[in-house]
Image 1 (tube, one colour):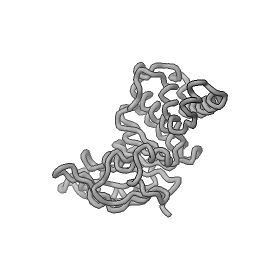
Image 2 (tube, helix red, strand yellow):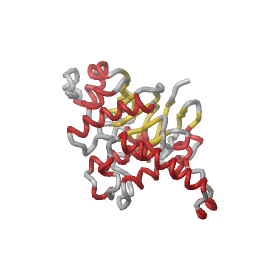
Image 3 (spheres, rainbow, N blue to C red):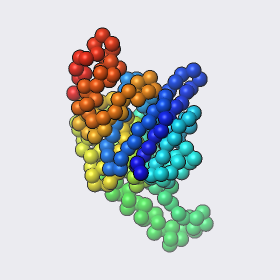
Image 4 (cartoon, rainbow, N blue to C red):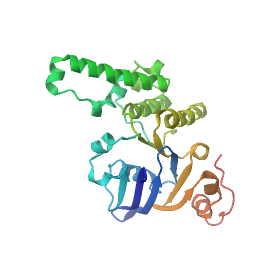
Length: 262
């Protein structure tokens, strides 16, 4: 059974075809990437997996479960977390509080228990805080721990959003443009963190990314979309040489020329 299986996924917005018969599988423990020119359907695909969008037809199975039968919050509780192109954080709250929000779905305390602050409530809150503190240490966010998110550099805010996703203890992590707005040094750190998230935390990762250098260094499998269709799939070295990929990025006249993904 595939960890994630997407079958013949199609979606239109009015007369615009966003996805057309897209199929692929993700194996557990892998790092995979989705690439393609602007408007290729990359984020739309991520939005379908996380159930922000409902496709017109097709299927998405996660560990055998039909994701299209679930609400977005239920998808999260099945072990899927995500980040966004632009950090979706509570800007007037601290890093710590934003990460604690990532624990919301795992809270078991009843309304009455929370109101009277029962021993069970106290114990549960301590366990959630311990998990968040582990994430802060893992991502080296100690200096940002008690800072208001709005006061943090953009690259750090991206990292806080990654931390909130990890606070959910996901099995599958969807990263939408994780390196956007980061410096070269921050992107190098991001590469190492993504690898550590897979190797140390056991999380399977699928990322949408425009930094082709990062994609080619970190991915085991690359899926290429163009105008909503999957035009190629394979390891990075094969993708570099694929004529359809070269055509999509360089145009018909330059197809066959090397694509600079450094």
